[in-house]
Image 1 (cartoon, rainbow, N blue to C red):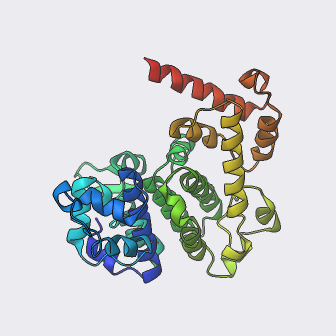
Image 2: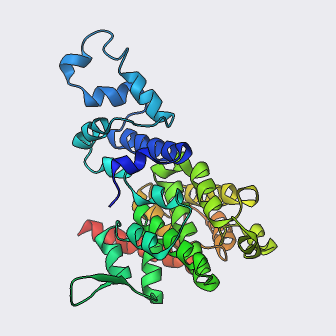
Image 3: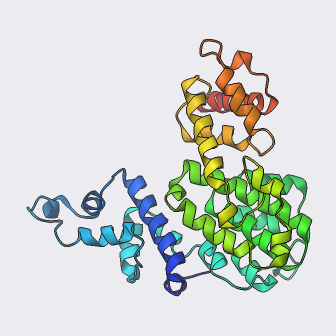
Length: 319
C-alpha cells in the first residue's frame, strides 16, 4: 500500500525514527551489538577474514543507528534477503499516519487496509461486488482483541481509529481507541525493539493528538496524575517515563519472586492485565509476595488472572 518512495518523502524526524527502529530490529534479530558485527553478518567469511575488512562499510551501519536516511532501496533489499520482512518496516503505514496533517476517511481507510489480514477482517466488510467498506461500529469484543495485540499493526490501527474519531468529533469513541493505543504502545516500548524510539515516537503521537483548543479540553488534571496515561498527553505533561518505569519494576520483581519466567510471552501476558486503575495494587501485591509461597498468596484479581493465563501457556508449551 505504501512504498519505499513514501518513506523517502517523510519528514526527517519521522524518517529517523523509522530508520533507527529498523536498525534495532536488524541488530536484535542478528543477535549482535555493534555496526561491525551487523556488517559481518551481511558478508561472507572470505571477506571478513581480510584485515581491515570493516574500515569503510561499517560507517553505513553507524549512520543507520543514528537515524540517518536510507536513500538506496537496494540496501534494504539486501538486509531483507538476510532477515525477511525487515524492509516492510520502512513502508509501514504508521510513519505515514503520523506524518499526515489530514485524517479524512479516505486516508484512514488506506492506512487500515495496509495492515494485516487479521486486523482488516475486524474492521471491514466485503460487499457482494467484492468491494470493501469499513464497519461503522466495532463490538466490545473486537476492540478488546485489537487492544490485546502486540504489534506495529495494532498500534497503527488503534491510533488511526482514534484520530478518525477525533476528526469526526466523536470524543467517547476517541477515548476508547486512544486508551487502547497507549496500552499497546507501552507494552511494545517495554518488551520490543520499539523501546529504542520510545520518546520521539510518543512525541509524534502527542503532536497528532494535541493541536487545538478542543484537544486541550479533553485532557484534565486527573489524566495527568494517573500512573498509566489513558490519554495521549502533550509531551510536556507526559507521564510515559513513570509508566515505563512501573512496568519495568513489575516485570523485574515478578521474575525475582518466581511468578514469571524471563521470556517474552509470560511478560506480555502479565502486562496485558495492567491498567491505570490496578497498577498500584499489582505492584504492591508483587512486592508483598514471599518467594517461597509464590502465586499461592496472590489476592489481586488481575494479577491472579495473569498468573492463571501464564500457567495455561506453560501447559500448552509442554504438549
